[in-house]
Image 1: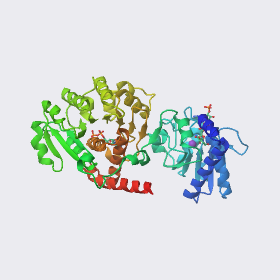
Image 2 (image 1 turned 30 degrees about the vertical axis):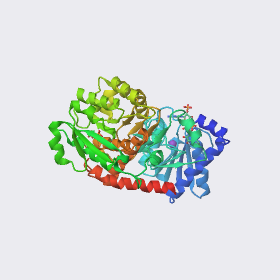
Image 3 (image 1 turned 180 degrees about the vertical axis):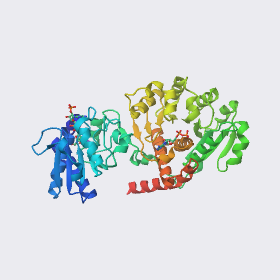
Image 4 (image 1 turned 135 degrees about the vertical axis):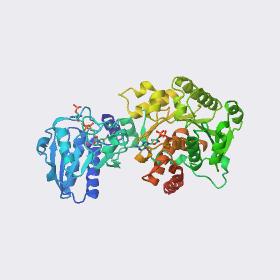
Length: 482
Ligand SMILES: NC(=O)C1=CN([C@@H]2O[C@H](COP(=O)(O)OP(=O)(O)OC[C@H]3O[C@@H](n4cnc5c(N)ncnc54)[C@H](OP(=O)(O)O)[C@@H]3O)[C@@H](O)[C@H]2O)[C@@H](O)CC1
Ligand SMILES: Nc1ncnc2c1ncn2[C@@H]1O[C@H](COP(=O)(O)OP(=O)(O)O)[C@@H](O)[C@H]1O
Ligand SMILES: [K+]
């Protein structure tokens, strides 16, 4: 915060005017979203979050609403002690206790008053972030209420995007308040910005096919199939790669599984790939993005094939069994990724927490690290894009960029949806999008596909929802162009 102030001052903006803008923006949101909230209780903290609250109270009063102040510190005669707050008397509670400066657990009178506010059933609006949520990592420090609306400034912080914090914020509104992205970026994360995974991150890399394009312009993705009784996962990934936009998709299958794969594939091609065949198959340079792992089986064969693909300079999504196969040989994988990556990482790892712990046990076990920290450290170490999955999937690049995803529904917690994601990432890599943006786009699309389907989703449904997601992207791109 201090750094934000200094940057703001350097840009010729005073702290006073920032606080004024912040408070005004909060009051404006309350006016437009809660027009009938005539009696407002304002919780005022000891720092700038509390200052924002005092300004908001002033603006609310100008609109003929009452604003009673309750606070932790005696900064103002009019502020009553927190203990006398009674939620039932008010139409709305404005939470301005702590924001970016939260430095220890919320307890005592502050915890009591936040609980009372929540129990009153009245809407709660938080300034910057619900008091008690750590803006840096989304963890709850002691106690934090679940609020209806959070008005934050300039852009979302990690605590708004990561769980459990995200679940406490309600609707999030970002108010500009006249502070530049640069000043804010330097203030919050001086070297390594964290983004919400929103279209502005990748829309300029999400071009749809041009009139003159043929299928090879859209890339040729390959998915490795497992043995005879384990072929479904590869076909899910392959269908998703084709629906995701790759021009061609081929399943590489062991001889024993050719028949079963052939019975289920139509638009997707099939090739035999036994251990000795891969080098020859890789002579076709148009095969440019591979998926290895879904249903593949754990062991030396997975390792050898993954390393061969990387050595041939192809882009590889390593998922599921592919990740687990490197449990005791992670450094070999990371070194291969280093050698084949030039400016762009060629390898994308898509672990869930369990798979992550197999490749990065020290990072998984370090409780001081946020999910963003874990993904970032892992990405640097592995020279790969890391997609650390979950309801708040984090995508990280070796250069320090990180994005937190918010699309999707809990219905994604069903078998096979990770296989679909792996295929979707490969589709974006096959279309030659930059690796970080490709992964961010795929994760966003995956979540959107789930949202389009709604309740009752199983993994097979996801690829069929992708055309609707493509339409959404086309429409976003058109809006952006105007
Ligand atoms: N970024 C920007 O550009 C802009 C930011 N703005 C606003 O500024 C806010 C950040 O302000 P801030 O830095 O003053 O911190 P804030 O959250 O008010 O709290 C610090 C105070 O709380 C205390 N304290 C901490 N934890 C505690 C606990 N658990 N229990 C009890 N006390 C605790 C802490 O005490 P200390 O640790 O120093 O002993 C200190 O006194 C930000 O969220 C946004 O609303 C806008 O105005 C405009 C532009
Ligand atoms: N509760 C949830 N909310 C949103 N997305 C989820 C949730 N649970 C899982 N997902 C997503 O579903 C996918 C599950 O992948 P994974 O665990 O690899 O499953 P599988 O191995 O069965 O394919 C990931 O993309 C993950 O981010
Ligand atoms: K707050």
